[in-house]
Length: 628
Figure (cartoon, rainbow, N blue to C red):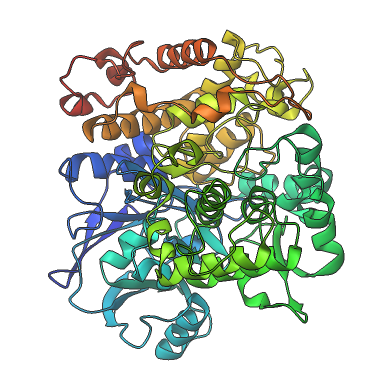
């Protein structure tokens, strides 16, 4: 393969202080592309089962895709993967910004890191060369301070860096990694893996333009189409993801008080519109993208100061610290977002673990003696901020909560019914009683409750909905009710989730309005071989299947593919009164998904025949040899 990729990854052994390049063949890229699929294929082959994710033997992989850095909207992304310290299974997260494009232009498609440095270091990559540098002065610093010190150390304010904050250094199990301070590989605790290696950052600078494309004119044509059709994305520029707050509140899809109440009456106080009209000072973007969906906020008030350096909150952050904690104080939510971003901490997990602690407090399972005097009740914005700071500093109850909600629940007798997680990872801000197809997607995902490589049921109720129309290239799919688990819904889940998995291999933003045919044409224009949506769908299915095998090898079984008991019990009031998946219906839908994926119906184990179809028969040796 001569186009679209460098054909080279950077290998780093921090224990030995050794760096070297590894060449990859064109056939490798045709099969695995990059991002998630590249990463899981390496992890499955090279990691020993059962290892401690925070040990030097874990691999931390930063992987671009063949579309990373291509001059069209949506391609300023890269994937990050490792064995997750939060779930103890496959951990993968995708992140935007400019760092991925800079790495690709600097001559590498991926960076694979093992070992642990004796003292804090950072990795410096420039135009195909790399070195390990001292990061002692940066250890303990916030993300903003760290980026400034790196740029000062290297004498270049245009340096791009993927880095961790104090949360990763303190091995908080849901610490994340940030690109450019406002973009985050947010889930699974990959920042803790980076911290366990004494690796503070990967700084990159390039003077090149990246790999050649096979048909630059076709790429330019798609870029022009996107720019000219602003009606497809102007809502995202105007309000960003927070624009969904009010709609979700109306539908009953805004999680409230740890998913325990049906409505949040104060939703307008924390909405995207309120954010825009009060504290929004700018909109930021990723490499080459016209949408500019990232919020930039600034606040100087009697109660809070919030620095614009750390951008602004997404929908998930507002929901996690707002409605799910019962907090309607937008200023407190903005401060919580800044604390997470400056310390590189996953806001979803942090908000959910605090809402769990609030429910424990209100039910008498923990007291002010446990919280160092904090009145940790729903709606107490100041108490939420104090507990968040305790988590960041690993002090008192915050030390336990820094282990994640599943581990915390095991240490607080009687609290497991309040722990909202799947496979150890906290749920994102989507209501499983409402989005029942997505709930099945949460259960079967190898990452834990993944809201990105998943369907959002409300997008498939109208025969003319863009989400449903996109999938017609694969099958004549019919619209379904938002809260059902019919065979049709499961088929939609199969196609949508595998397509999203492909986007995480390419790597391309999920929010772009491109059709599968447009994406296939883009892939052909960049890489120089003829492709079609079906081939790309198989790439996504390949990634999901290899991730499934990784988790099975680590001891996960079909019984782990579930959701908390709370979601099988309907609310008695509100928009979702009487609505919840049945246990039998949920299990039947799960088995239907297994069947479509070519996994055994009882245990969800990929069959050898499906592995041959996906051209990864080598993975057969990693299949569990157990009776399900």
